[in-house]
Image 1 (cartoon, rainbow, N blue to C red):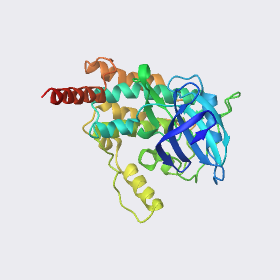
Image 2 (spheres, helix red, strand yellow):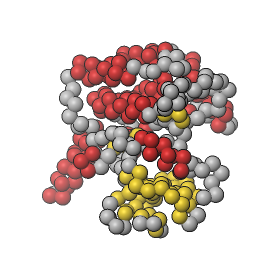
Image 3 (cartoon, helix red, strand yellow):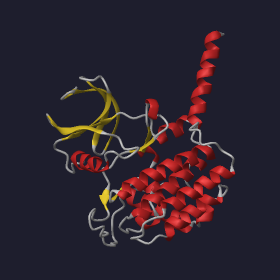
Image 4 (spheres, rainbow, N blue to C red):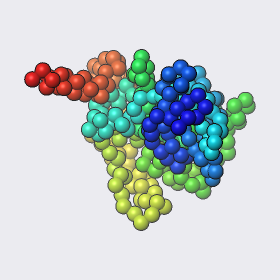
Length: 304
C-alpha cells in the first residue's frame, strides 16, 4: 500500500488506534514506521499524537515525525523506524533482566520522562512496550513512544498547573498504574514516575504481584489490581531487591499533586547503586550478550 511517498511493507502491530506498518520512503529508501487510523475513527488519535510529537521534536530519544496527513480513508503519521521494544527484549532474555541492564535503562528512561515533563506534558502510559531501542549507531539509545494518552499538565507559558480532580477513569495500563490513578485521582508528574518504578521491578522480578488476577470484567479486574497494590507495603512489593527501588517508590508516593519531582535525586539513587555494584556503563545490555552468544553458537554449528 502506498501512502504518498511512503510504502507500507509489513505490519508491526495494531491497537485501539489502528495499525502500524514498517515501510520505506520510496524517494530516499529510508526505513520508516507508518501509523494508520481509519478516517472514521470514533476517537481520532493520530493527529492529536502528531501534534504532541511536534512539541517534543528535537529531544533525545524522541522519534522524528516525517509526515502527517490524510490519504484515502486513513489518517497517517509517519515516524522514524525504531528497534525492538523493551518488552520484546525482555521476552528475548527469558523474562528477566540483570540489575546492571535495569539500572542502565532506568537512567535513560528517567531522562525521557523528565524531557516530556519539561514540555508541559504527561505521558500517562509508561510501560515496557512504549520504550524502544534505536537502530544502527543509536542502537543503545532508549526512545519513548506512543503519545495517544499524553496530556498537558500545565500551561506552557504561565506554568499554571491543572486542577486536582477525583472520580477519573483509569487512563493507561492497570498493571503499571500508580495507586492514585487507581483511586481515580487526576494524574500529574508523580504518576509517570511511579509507573516507571513498577516497570523496573517487573524487569528485575519477571512479573508483578498483581499480575494474573482473574475477574469477570475489566472493571472488577482493575479493582482487584488496585486492592493488591494498596494492601501491600512498598517493602513487600520490592522484597529481595535492592533497597533503592523501595526508596524510589516511597519518594514517588510522597510527592504532592503539583510537585515537580527531583529527577536528579532519582537518577543519582540508581547511579550510586550502579557504582556500588562495580558495574561499567558500557551499554552492554543482557540482549547484547545473548545475541552475541547465539551468534557464536550458530557460527559453531556452521563449522561442525
